[in-house]
Structures are given as structure tokens and as C-alpha cells.
Amino acid sequence: MHIDYYASLNSPWTHLGAARIEALAAQHGATLRIYPVDFGTIFAGSGGLPLPKRSPQRQAYRLQELARWRDALGIPIQIHPKHFPHNELPAAACVIAVRETFGDAPAIRLAHRVLKALWEEDKDPADPATLAALIGDVGLDVQKVMALGADPQWLERRKADTEAALARGAFGAPFYIIGDDMFWGQDRLDFVARRLARG
Image 1 (cartoon, rainbow, N blue to C red):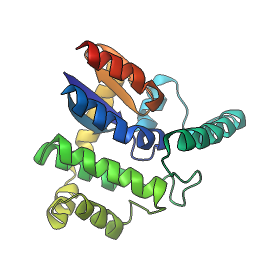
Image 2: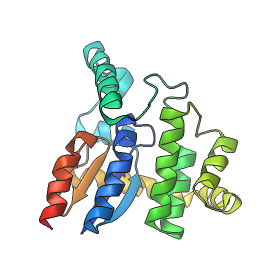
Image 3: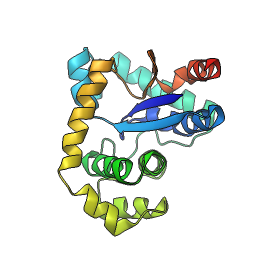
């Protein structure tokens, strides 16, 4: 079994589901491939709105839901992190470079470390020194990954991954696809588990 995992490196919801999607894949022997795509483009192409353009009611409800999920899962996110939204392009380029050069597992570790830094540690993953430290934290060669990430081909690949995500039906983050089955949101991971159990 295989899970395609469309992630935003700015999304608290992606962070709240990060450990659980990894655990579910391992539990069921499924492969997991991460795509840190451009959800600004996906929102524009699927009828969604970026957070600043959403109504005050929706923005207020989002904050309540973040607090509820933080408490329910015991994941100590900051509701108003200092560096949200950060420029996710440098981190996304490094994640894609790692995925294509070293494999899926280290790419997922790096993406999830970036999200933890943003949402739990009030760090700015767009800062080169911070990003370098995060790369080192997950056991990757800092100089090699930073050099790889500077290659413009990875942001071109991100554009292609984004278009592919839209074509497959993705419209929000995180988004998981198993075969023909689509799941939007970390609050759908119970259904992901049922789908994986079915085989």
C-alpha cells in the first residue's frame, strides 16, 4: 500500500497529524511519500481562500479548533507562532531535494522537523541558519542538503507536484491519497487507518 501525502510546511493541521500519519504508515506497512506543495495555488484552483482572506467567523473558529486539537492530542503548539506564515520555499526545496536524492523517510523527517520548529518552538524555518540546524537535527548532511536545496529544479518540481495534486483532487492541507480514496485533514486519520486496515 502507498500513501501520497500533500503537506503544507506552514500548516498547523499538517503538524498536528504528522506523527500519526508516520505511525499509521509504519503500522500497516505502507509506503509514504511527501509532497510539500503550494497551497496558495491549490486554493486558487479549487475554490478555497488563503487564511487572511477568510471571513472573521472562520478565522475565529480556526483558533478555537487549534486550541481544542492541541489539548486533545497533547501537542504543545503555539496558537499564534511568531513566524507564521514563514517563507516556506527554502524548506520545501530542501525537502523535495532530500526526497528525490535520499528517499522518502528522510524527507518526511525534515518536513516534520520544520513544522515542529514553526509551531512548537517559535523558530523561523526560512532563516538559513535555522534551516541548516533543522537539517542537522534529523541527521542529514547540512552542507550537502543546503547546496542541493539551492538548485532551482526543486522549486520547478514543486510547481509540477502542485499541479498534479490539483489534478488528483487535493484542495486542503494535509491531504492523503490511498489508491482512489482521498482524505482531507488530520481529523480524517481514523478513516485513513480504516482504509489501510482494509488493504
